[in-house]
Image (cartoon, rainbow, N blue to C red; front, top):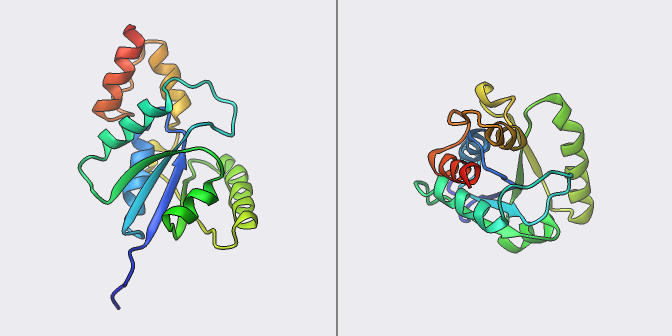
Length: 166
């Protein structure tokens, strides 16, 4: 059976910075979607100390996925369901690293469904080698002078190094 319309997924987050765990979830989501929109949030719902502006985070996401025209990046503020409807997303992709992520993500998925009955959420787990990885850990290790080259792609690493040196 041939699909008439491409299946569009939306992957929201702060991506401050985007890690290889994020990349893994994004690329694997293309097994079930034809197109992925990585939605970089202006503000994050959890209290986190940001490192990069939304414009810088958007640029990093674009650089990381420049090799795949099925992945695009947009910035947004406001309700995710509004953006999802606007771009015609069929489902939201969320990564789960550990059981501790599930409760928060489940609540968000339920709220999104309450706000828009067409909202569906698909949870993906990252490759085991990235199951512990978070952007906040990468920021902290980088800030303290640690080597994060195994955890982020080259464009992200360059920005982190420039930020640490500046």
